[in-house]
Amino acid sequence: MPLRIYRRRLPHWRIEGATYFVTWRSHRGRCRLHPSERDLVVDVLRHFEKVRYELLGWVVMDDHIHVLVTPQPDWELGRILHTWKSVSAYQLQRHHSRRGAIWQHDSHDRIVRNREELIQKVTYIRRNPIVRWPGLDRYRWLWWDPAAYASGE
Image (cartoon, rainbow, N blue to C red; front, side, top):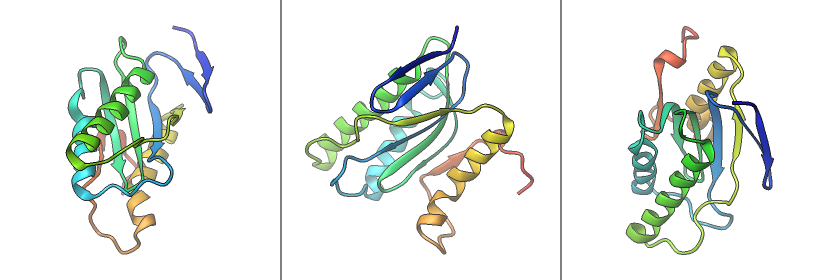
């Protein structure tokens, strides 16, 4: 399948078999995600793991999410993102009394081009909570596949 490029607010590049580093943010002016709400988002991310996509790493922060994901051949990244955002928004509204838009409409995604970039993105995911909250020694909404990360740390 050839490279396909389209644009919403941001440009999006798609190619079958690619791994993507994806980021999306909570809607402007919305409250931050509480711990139980982050648990819900993690459950949504993991729901179709190994069926629609492979997850290589993720972190659910209080106002944004980063995911390293490789879609299965029959699943486009746009469909996966739509499912993650719409299902989590619906559940946050239904079970956590959230109102209105939960997530910003667009998301930022980047094709991971090589192993070096993959390691850099996994490192970024791992460090994101520590950078936000210095002194933090554990963060339960963080996961990465050790096989995707071999830097010797």
